[in-house]
Image 1 (spheres, rainbow, N blue to C red):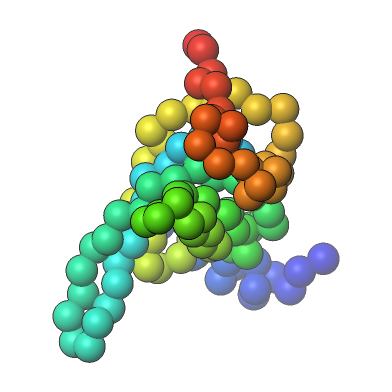
Image 2: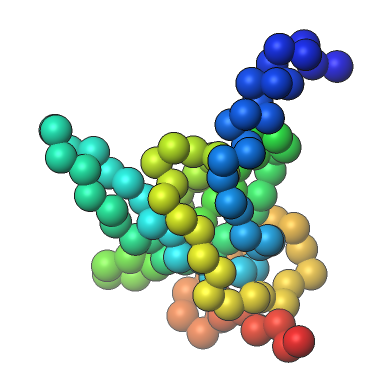
Length: 118
């Protein structure tokens, strides 16, 4: 049971954000606002969502991409973060798990996820 003031504060934070419906296995493209000194820029981060956890304003998700020299890069983002400019779903993945941590051990074609047919 949360304090009613905390609930009101969290509801205010959530109401302004528009978050698409996505889950583990989906390929996402994130636009992240990066502040360097007094300037800001938007950088994209594209990868597979391997997990979602939490609820309300504390909900987070993990995105994994393969960077330069086949090095895996994972980042954890709060869904209602101020630095997240936008989230777009590029592909829907057909997976049978909520957490895809097994992708950390896979490389190349073994790490592919089938696309969900509609």
